Image (cartoon, rainbow, N blue to C red):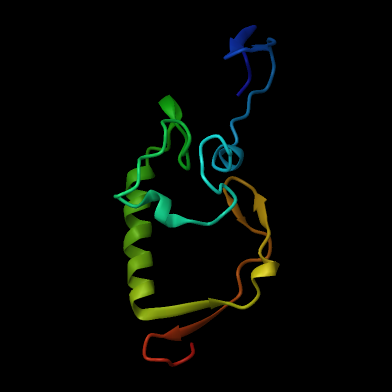
Length: 124
């Protein structure tokens, strides 16, 4: 966003016409808000865990410009992943090849190579 006039953002002065960027990548890895922030740990969002502090988990944005499709996207992702993981076993070929880049979303630079097997052991 561009600042339309001079203002303050917390303790920081913001000059008119400054560009303000909120980086989910940085917020989601901030040591003040997350234990072991660099680790992939989906269990931190389990029901028996404390909810993240407001504004520290923003995969769909926040405030008046939040993604209107966030709820349906999360539902679709959960349904699709649960079906895939129920039927198939995924094994990464080389974890070291995965390097994140940012576009509109964060994604692996060269995809993620996996071997895929059916749960009964047949390789796909």
